[in-house]
Each structure stands twice: as structure tokens, then as C-alpha cells.
Amino acid sequence: DSGVTQTPKHLITATGQRVTLRCSPRSGDLSVYWYQQSLDQGLQFLIQYYNGEERAKGNILERFSAQQFPDLHSELNLSSLELGDSALYFCASSASSGRASDTQYFGPGTRLTVL
Amino acid sequence: LAKTTQPISMDSYEGQEVNITCSHNNIATNDYITWYQQFPSQGPRFIIQGYKTKVTNEVASLFIPADRKSSTLSLPRVSLSDTAVYYCLSADSNYQLIWGAGTKLIIKP
Image (tube, each protein chain N blue to C red):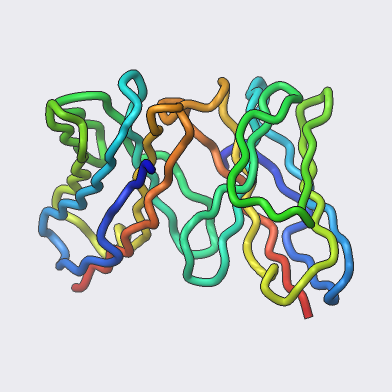
């Protein structure tokens, strides 16, 4: 158990809908990262927050947005969903601001299926 | 443009030593190179990290040459349970994190 929790575990929805994925980092960790992993694909970095502020941005679509709250949990919002958004979405947390030396602890993921 | 390159897949047999090499150009001068392991439908987990030369822990070794343009993850005496995808992670000169595409390692009996 990494100490990172993600809810829900599974989500099935229809095209055009909007969903929110939630992540609680490990106790004391200040950074939260979001990743998308499509079937048999590698990790695609979406976005990172550090202590409430956006720290780094990857290949995140404009239909997607995220935020980190004062209690450090984070939410990833996906809107106008398309079939291609079906994937595993991972959240990770780390203690510091996000160097490669900063070990990331990954949650179990949320499996999103868009029908 | 910084890029991290690793082989897409590798096969080996139980009991063998496996070496997976990652190439990372334009790497940040003051950051580490980190490797993660991912099993199907699970999040990646940390294996090992290093800055230069050789680092060893209970599961793997990491070799990083002086120019730091590559790193090699070494798994001694692999078993079937080492079948997984292995990712290298480094940072570019702007300290933006760069993930490799992952190496799918299949261990055969």
C-alpha cells in the first residue's frame, strides 16, 4: 500500500459527459501528479501540483482540468468525454516539489470507461 | 528537445541477469535518474535511483556512466515475478521530468 488513495476505482460513463477523479496524497506529501495510461501504453504525464499551485504541465487536453485543495487532496476533472479518454488514470504524490530524485508514490488508479 | 529512450521489450529466462538501458540526452546536471516497475493494472513503484557510478539495493543495481547520458538497470537472477514494465525517469535541463516509454520485460521459465 503506497498510502495514496484514489476514488472511484472504476467509472463508466457516456460520451459527452463530465467526471471528477479524486486523489488523496500520502500524509505529508506536498506534490500531486496526474497520469493517463491507455491500454498497453506508457505513462502520459498530465499535470503536477505542489502545495496548491500548478507546478508542471504535460500533455493535458483543454477539456481536462485539475486542482489541489488546501488539505492537499486533488481532483482531476474530465469533460466532454470521448471514447479515446478511456484509460487508467493514476495519481502519484511526492514529498517535495518534483525532481526526478523525488520518489513518486502511485495510487491504485481509476479505470475510466467511456461508452 | 530532451528525450528518454529505452527498448520497447526484452525477453529473458529465470535465473539470468537482465540489463535494461535508458538513454537520456540533455539531462539536468543536478538531478537523479530513477527507475520504476509497473505490474499490470497497478501503479508504478520505485525500484532504485542514482546520480553517478553504481548504486545497489536489495532488488537491483543501477549503473550510470560519468557523462550521465545513459543508465542501466540490472536485475540479478530474475524470476517469473520480475515480469513487468520498467520505466526510467530523468529531468531535462529545465528540470522538467521526462519518462521513458517503458520496457516490457518478459521472464520465461
